Picture 1 (cartoon, rainbow, N blue to C red):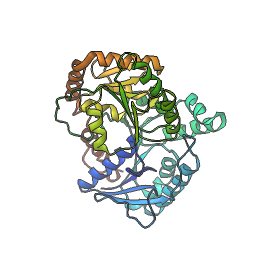
Picture 2 (tube, rainbow, N blue to C red; picture 1 turned 120 degrees about the horizontal axis):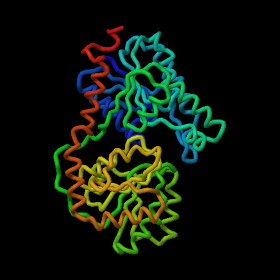
Picture 3 (cartoon, rainbow, N blue to C red; picture 1 turned 180 degrees about the vertical axis):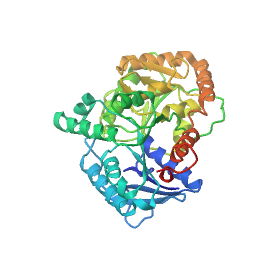
Picture 4 (cartoon, one colour; picture 1 turned 120 degrees about the vertical axis):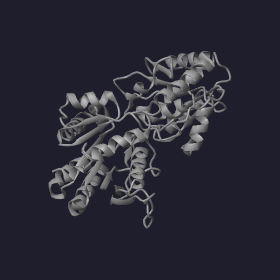
Length: 389
């Protein structure tokens, strides 16, 4: 099949769960013999070939700053949508399936708008689905209502949809998505072989972007409070983003320069090694569409701390007391208490975390999700959807 993957970011030029999902999806599809093109915004120097592992990468828009003040800018999605629409208008008849992220929306609307001309089938990933209240909080009253309306248009587009959590799948159904919808539970692409957990160091790890939704700054006072009962406690806060200066200030204000490392983004093998020796992963996010790093921690026997909330699908990956704890709030004292509880649970919690991962590894693997994707491309009867019209 001829498949176009559509997302405005490309790993490793930008780092995130969706970026990794689309890179691995494109790579695996190309390895299986499909003709795969990745449509994105340019994030590399001019003249470079960003293609990888048999995947053709096409920049349909210029290099642009995606964030301002920790929030997504509106102009890049509009430019990307125009670029996607123009590309598919010209070349859509050479494509069987367009597989796009729902966000940043304009690219999905563009693909839907030229679908009759291109005669391709549309598959959409819904990593998240925001409430009206969250849109208004994120963008303000006017722009938030516009964002909510645009998202609603995307929900009502005819599509074969995938979602990565039960939370957002249920929302989409309530909001009017009527086509086929399947939850893809697996995004873990590492070794599925059960591993014996390493002895834990008194180390708390965060790994991800430093953006407001992740609430990284709350970890600094939480570490300070937990040190009252675990004096040698340390932390490694991996990643970067607009909240990093605030995190650095809080580290200095609490006098924790000796105890908290801020190395920025590090390579995947280093993330795995750091998680393997950690007491726990701390992910205080208020909003997660999935929470891949929770699985990465569980794979090495390290329990996770996540925070309950109406927009946090990462809680679906934590069985309280088995492979981590679901904390009631992101209050530093509550997080500190959870860190102390994990420390007290010791090797027993690490063993149960490793056992939990072994029991669920196949279902939560990327390979399992890819099988579902290819099945959807085949329309359930072994033929490409485009051949079934």
